[in-house]
Image (cartoon, rainbow, N blue to C red; front, top):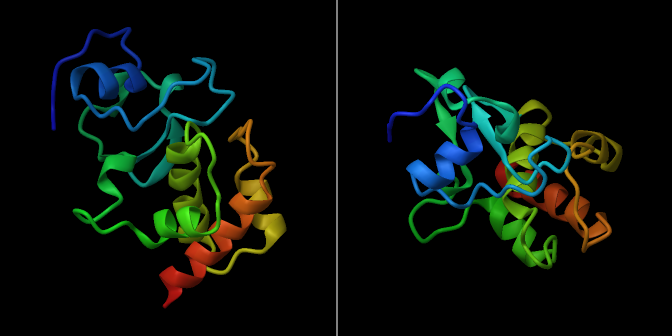
Length: 143
């Protein structure tokens, strides 16, 4: 998908308002919460801290592209099955960050996961089930 954006338009705003990819959530607009994490050329970034024009020509992956049709990605299934979400607001950013963690380390420890998720805030779960979900998702992805 493509579109035009003013130089001052944030990537999160462009994704949500121009491309109608509303799975990218905006919780703070200050890059503190991580709800807006997307992958920019395979690297997780907080899209509220990147201008849309900076993504020109880049590959941008959002939560909308993680599932395969109606089939959830193993990491999404793991979040569901391990109660790694409650209100769901932070979940897209958590899943996108978790995918990056597992890409770099297919068998992460609890400490690795907690360190990797340090830039993502959840106000509901207390993180234990999120860590369990990432471990389960990583295991499912390994096969």
